Image (cartoon, rainbow, N blue to C red; front, side):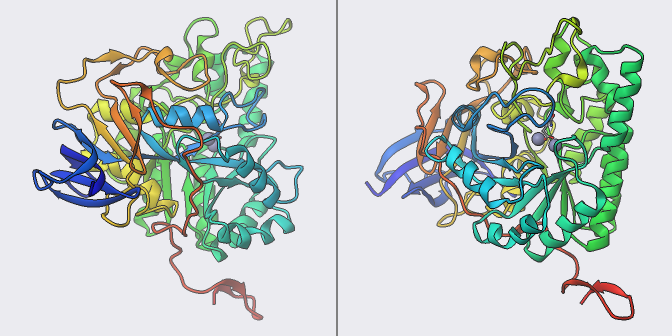
Amino acid sequence: AEFDLIIVNGVVVTDTEVGEYDIAVKDEKIAKVVKRGELRGVKATRTIDAEGGYVMPGGVDGHVHLEEPPLFGKGSSADNFETGSRSAACGGTTTMVPFAPQKKTEDTLLDTLALTHAKAKDNCYIDYSFHLLVGNPSPRALSEFKTLREEGITSLKIYMTYEALKLNDGQILDVLLEARKNQITTLIHAENGDLIDWMTAQLEKRHMFAPKFHGPSHPPMAEIEATHRAIRLSEFLDTPILIVHVSTPQATASIKAAQDRGLPIYAETCPQYLFLTAQDLAKPGFEGAKCVCAPPPRASEADCDAIWTGLGDGTFTILSSDHCPFRYDDAATGKKTCITDEFPDGRFKDIPNGIAGVETRLALVLGEERLRLTKFVELTSSNPAKLYGLYPCKGGLVPGLSDADVNIWYPPGKMPEIELRNEMLHHDVDYTAFEGRTLKQWPRYTVLRGRVVWDREGAGLVGEKGYGRFVKREASSLARPRFEGEWDIKEDGSFGFF
Ligand code: URP
Ligand code: ZN
Ligand code: ZN
């Protein structure tokens, strides 16, 4: 056969175009994208008839936590590389960028990287890279940025909150300076940790322990202030940053204002800020614990609407899951409910922050039909690939250059609407915060480097553990400094880029 796979009769959607094209795949790559019908008579080992459904580049999820130690409250990650990547594949995501977490007590990043490689190797169903999570920007760790870059790790994440991870402003500047020198993109968790701790103490003083008080313990101001500070620190050193999991209209507005000033400020949001509100946190009993993440779901639908608007108008560069899975009901670590003899109704400050969503990200958001199709692909696949130095290998359908990572969706009217149930999902988590939501779409087939890994009407998961491989990344093709030269201070005390 001339080709390994051909996909015919699809409506092909990329970040720039929607059209009736057929696709041919050879040796794991997109070989041809041609007008519908032009592959008639061509021999291929396998042919998939998309029957008019959307055919898109596979999802790229730039924010996934797997096999991390307890960092965000009590409890360890429920998913490991196997179960997390399995779940991703079944939801149409073909590339993920989980974290390699360096603890505050560790001096080096390279050991963290080696350890994370060992956890992922031979265990993944989809392709992957890592963001280094810098918990301790020691002189040694900073000196290792160059090696990270050479190893294909071109992004890192830092935190302005969480006792176990929080950096002070001086440490943030150290990281930004070194990141700029090495063309590494810095992701920032922008919440003011002191403000959160202060509010937590205020709430506890008033005996407010229930899960719903997680909301006021992480007020909008914690995000607004930290976002502003992160933008100004980035501006000071002209270092591109991505603010992760943005949840408030006010932080969105300040990011947009910075972008309008020409600053290299990028932003991410996640389905939780589109679909969940304080009402979900306030569900009776301990149910609210299922929606505890940081930042928390905000007050009302108006907040969600502002985030949708930011997705549509380009303020947000990417839409990730922030898959950060903990079990709801597990006697060992990771018990979301945190019920003890002393706190029979649970205690919000002990509930590990994070929810699972790597499998539901694409279907939930596409099904809402609130984004243009090209915008959907841009936010969930092409832009994360560009931002994290994976494009056009990932995130595109460029003949000769792109890996044959493809999602084939149901044609209109073909898939009966269903209600999301956790039993449908493939993660190692005993609940989903999105239980009961209506799904109008789900990937019918997902293809990774030319191989079908998900076949919804066939055997479901048909990919293999270990087929997913590490992808070395280039520097970001989106996030670039504005100025030439290196930051320095001259003898006369003037400072800038020379
Ligand atoms: O709720 C969240 N987001 N959990 C912690 C992981 C993170 O991204 O900070
Ligand atoms: Zn975060
Ligand atoms: Zn996260």
